[in-house]
Image (tube, rainbow, N blue to C red; front, side, top):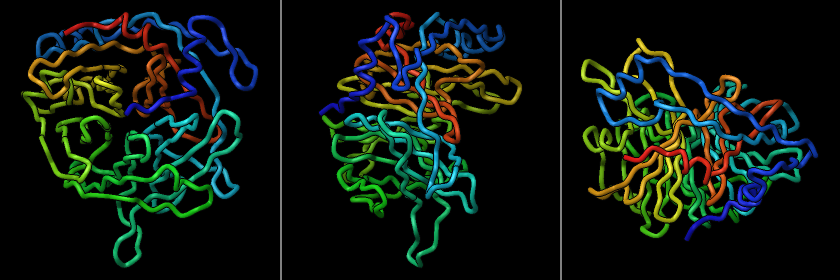
Length: 342
């Protein structure tokens, strides 16, 4: 069963024609063609089959304003991690950073509102104390639940993957998970295959990809060779290679869409580029991969944090939530026409 992202789907009908946001202000169409260092390009060509970063197409970007973030009537700030759209609602995971200790939150709004619902989803230990699992990640819905990873804010830390019922997301209510399982790694993003009843988890820098069933049983782990073939993962060291570090990803029908940053393997390179890649038969030996480099918006990497996708529009939320928030949308058909085949 495929989740329908209603708001993004409605927006897709407006491309490429001019349209208006909910405030009546015409959306901004931005055209960008940034240039990446030749050294990074040469490294990508020589060490792997990384396609993102080689060319940046000219694409229209639509910008939509979101409400200011307030929690309990007070201005708040959260480091954005994941985005999902269900039945016209925007769901965002973020780590609240304007308090001590930092906390993991789930937020919700819709185009008709001027505020957000907010739930503290930081796990509590057996003694009732707040744990160090303050980093919520990229998420996806299976149609009835949101699957959200909650991790320690450190590489190779511990995680819990939790399933939250969407119908139980009541404003002002306490949120409890219906199911959870632990992972001995930092899981930064989860994608959901409803048809196969599988969960795909990407760890920090996508050095590993895990596949579990809906009962939390590990089915498969993809590591260096398999990830290199797919252009995913950043490997440091002498034998390092650039790759796409997945920030958020979604399974829509038979395709797995992954957004993230093309990152170099070491500190000598500082430039990174936003990438959207999509796969058919991702786990199979004859998988197909396509990718496209995303344009920048005033220096902002669109794929550096949260992403949601429908059949017609890709939505990006790259900036932290605070007093001023905005969502960027690109037409998926335009992106797919610009893709580089592998």
